[in-house]
Structure formats: C-alpha cells, structure tokens
Amino acid sequence: MLIAIITLCRKENDSVIEPHGGVLVNRIAEDTERKSLLEKAAWSPSITLTSWSLSDLYLIATGAFSPLTGFMKQADYVNVLKEMRLENGTIWSLPITLSVSKEMVETLSPGDTVSLKGEDGKIYGLLQVEEMYEYSKKAEAFFVYGTVDPDHPGVQKTLEKEDYNLAGPITLLTHPEKLRENFQTPAELRATFEELGWKSIVAFQTRNPIHRAHEYLQKTALEIVDGLLIHPLVGDTKKDDIPAPIRMKSYDVLLKNYYPKDRVMLSVFPAAMRYAGPREAVFHSLVRKNFGCTHFIVGRDHAGVGDYYGTYDAQKIFEQFSKEELGIEILAFEHAFYCITCASMATAKTCPHEANFHIHLSGTRVREMLKNEQIPPKEFSRPEVIEVLMDEMNRTNEEK
Image (cartoon, rainbow, N blue to C red; front, side):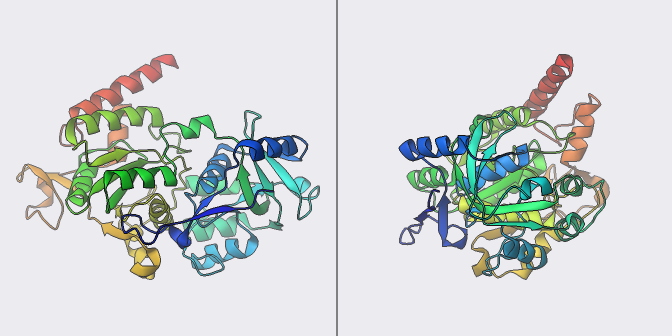
C-alpha cells in the first residue's frame, strides 16, 4: 500500500499559510505505482462508493481534508462527535467516514485491501483496512446536526447509511472526471496564489448563485486582503438547490462584469453539502485554510437549512476556539440588505433607517422567484445573473 506522501508547508514563506495540522496531505498514486496498485485493486474485494463518499475520497487524497489521510477510525470519529476534535486534539468538526454493511464487514479483516469503485464501475482508489466498527446513526445525527428529524437533509442522508464504518488510509488511483472539472487542488491553488503574489486571501463558500448581499460581503472583505477566492460547493446538494453547472455560468457572468479581474479567482469545491450549520461553518473554514486562504467569510445562517439553526449560530461557534488553533481569520458579517433610502447595500451596523426601508435578500427567496418564473428586482441580483439563471432553468425544464 502506498505510504502517505506528506508535503510540509514552507513555513519560511509568509505568503503560504500553514495547512491544518501542519502538513498538506497527498494520497495520489502516480505512474508505475498507480499501474501496480490498479492491478492489485482488480483482485481485491470492492465497495461501490456513493457520490458523497467519492467526493470525500477525492478531497482526502488531494489534501483538502488535511490532516486526514483516510476515513476516520473510531477514536477520531467519537471525539469529533463529542468534542469537535480529532483524538490528538486537532480541531475537526465533521465525521468523514465510509459506511458499509454488516455482510461486507464479515468478509474483511484488518490489513485487507479494499478496492473503491464509483457507481460507474471504475476503480477510483484503495483503502487499507485498519478498523471496522458499528455506530449509532441517530447519535451521529444528533451530534452533527443537533436534531434527529428525518426532514433535515443531512439527517436523512445519515439515516440512509449502512450500520458499520470502514476505516483506514486511502490511495487515489483515478481522478473522478466530473469532480475534477473547474477544480484546483490545494497544492495548485497555493501555487497560483504565490505566483500572483497574494499573501492574504479571503474565501467565500456558496451553494447558491451570488446575489447582491453576497457581493456586498465579498467586496467589503476584498478591501482588506490581496485576493478573493469564490469557492462554490458543487458536490451533492438538495434537489431544490440550483444545479452547479447553471450556477457556474452565473458566477462567470458576474465576475466578468462586476469584479476586478486581477483580484478574484473562481475555483470549485467538489464536496457534498452536509447542511450542518455551525459545525459545517467550522469545517468549511478549516478546509479553505488547506487551500491556502488566510480569511474566511461567515455570514447569516452559514450552511443552514430551514429553521434548524439560529441566525448567527454559525458565527458564535467559533468562540469555542482560539484564533491560534483555527489558524484562519474569520470575518463574521451581519445580514446584508438593500436600503431604499440609502440606495445601497448595508447592514444594521451601517444603516440608520427602519426595517420597512430594507429589502432583505436570500438564496431561498431567489430560488422561489425563479421557480415561479418571476424576475427578481435589481436590488436582489444583477440583471445579467438573473438572465443566465432564467435562461438555463427554462432550458432545463424544456429538456425534461
């Protein structure tokens, strides 16, 4: 099995932030080693990964989930649920696990090698089995999501999993083509930032089109850093979320017309959306540190869904950790709105006018208007973005 290749971040270069845990993991087999391992994988017992697990495999292998080198062992898993830390004390807020059936577990032993296949039948990786353990799906849901309500999309996914977790280091043998599109690995983005001379980079996480409130937060943050990374999540999302290909077109037209070209980058984050609210906000910040970002925007109801989390719970959770432990600066913003009297975007910190002068924006409201074929006003979103979204969604509906 491939020995972990771990690249130490160059601490002497101030333009490169240290990855989470101090190392940037690389679990990708190359050339002759890859060929040899593929031959081995063909004769190994296999597991078919869900799209969620395949994205986890890819992000572990490329270092996005550093310091993880594989799917979590039981000690790390339990500690993450209870303490939001790995067993060694490193901050980590979400379990990264591979669930398998009892029948599969009964055929395996520690030390075995398992082939990891996609739903298309291709071999994408290998896992060296270290542990197999039973776990409580309801307990996991409660700790991660704060609820066991099956209507919560994250809880629903958790309850659908198998009853055992398979743990151990992984090796990537094949890049998933769909996840690779528009994706730059942490090492690649870090090299790009260094080439651009950016020493401070703010990341913005989104699973929605960028509306005017988002734009306001991004540009406010851009005033204090060298560059902005717009890093949309393009893995599994809820069925009613706008599909990633449509969103990507909306990002392109927005950046082309309203952002400084030499200070903004667009690259995707091919992870599954957990909708874990506060815990996922911490997770999103740590992952962006691995990509080389020094700052991370946390706005209203980050990674939330429905009414499961308080408006600013995703900001308050960071109070549990020291700035030194996190290693990335959190930019916490209040909910932005368009003030008719000010004739501009603002927040409660900058606008003196009463609420009846405010137009509140949200991704949910924009999705509802688009679904009902209503054109959101310019105070909601840039006209070019709305045009792209409506054209693409109409085309998609016609194709159905």
